[in-house]
Image (cartoon, rainbow, N blue to C red; front, side, top):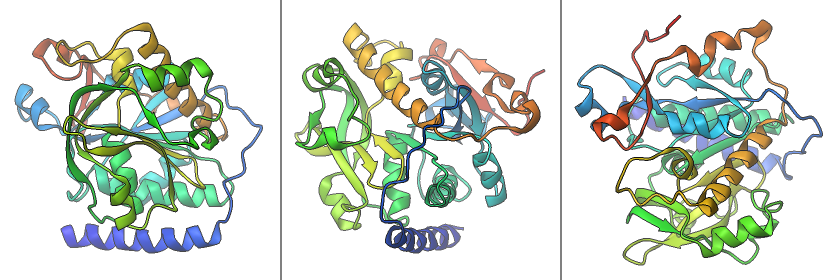
Length: 332
């Protein structure tokens, strides 16, 4: 099974290099704005900690804070399932307006899992954009790491680091304002991000600038900010694809707004809320730039509201609320 995953990722790397050679400019932006954007949020394998609290009950999950993150910026959310074939992802990407890869603890070398689904989604989204169909992907924490992983053709390049329960200001690089992510950010937002300890970091792996060099991605992704972990190791904290509307951040803005588990050192002050909301608004506004939709109101059958939400914070989970899925978890 692992060999099949490696073959898939190897073919992806070849396709992406060809695509980069053909596409010489950033995808043209459109004046079209969708006032009913729908974001597809990728599920992932049930985590070890959730499985301990709910033994052998669920196969996959989405932390509800990611749903609230896009809802708070004016979007609807649908789950995207792992373990499906390519035709499923082709279909769902033709209906949603953007994809969010959430943070978590999934392994990248698992067949039919988070990383394999991400690789297929990345390939499809790359093709859509190169055909002039503006389609964004947003990766948070593990999702950011997944973005560089699939772009590297499945070559593991992350560095071990220590940045758990660490609140930090961003260390912007000199030309960060030339990026799409930050070019329209207000002076107040930039001041908060660069001077206040507002970004919530919870990761045991990092991607460094040297890591990008090792897998030949320095010309593919623009680095806008870095940070340093508890041991002083520098890691990348925000990136965007040079040509395509693909964005990644190593920190967790959804936690500032929607996660209230105690003793996690998550900033909830007004500055943190304002800065975190900026990222949600930015991503959803990117997703407004295409006209994908579900036919004849069938989005009602796919929305996250069809699924039960669990108060996992009651059991001291890292997530206050979580959507946990079996193969049949729809509710009327």
